[in-house]
Length: 264
Image 1 (cartoon, one colour):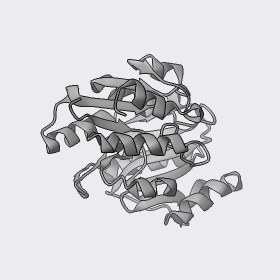
Image 2 (cartoon, rainbow, N blue to C red):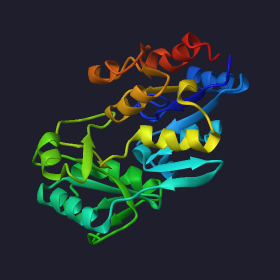
Image 3 (cartoon, helix red, strand yellow):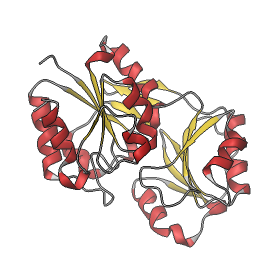
Image 4 (cartoon, rainbow, N blue to C red):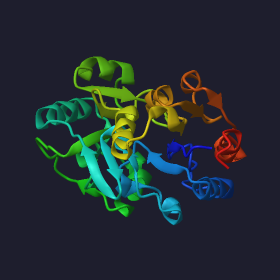
């Protein structure tokens, strides 16, 4: 088989809710690489906050920040951020709606203190453990922010999208806890944009690509790649964009997908 370029989501695909990686997933990754296939991360996260359990698998390259940041050969080849004006507008809206907010950039994930509530103490602790900061004062006019994550706004995702839709796209997270939280991505930026950058770097063709994911921010890459695979735990809307639906993550879904696609 001709080597494939395989793009893998993290949360809900490579690792579960507890940020653990199943032994069958490790086996699948190792065997696919041994067979000559190129494996890439394709995540809403920046590389700096990848789960520590993935470290032994040594993923160096991939699409990060839902397409806003791309690393190939260990070097950043693409990085797009919100303009300071658009950053200010989004921050103002999130504060106005009382949303717990995380500001994401290549420097790390930072918790906005102005709308922090103790119910998010565990998330704050997790972010700080990864090198993030707790911002007592809200920074103004930042130019290095690629994405936001928010929870518990006093409006729905759809209402916030109407308010900010000319400058961003809002999707639910892989593990949504309500309809009032999601990921805020730059307008026109998604994982398929990042994948195109990877393919350009390696002079590869989209027909040789496979994408595997479970969340709303995976839809564009499932549509783009030669074969799109949805995890069994994916939302129904995501499954509708897939060519194949594998088993759930806890039932060795990634291994089964690799086997089905003859990557291993």
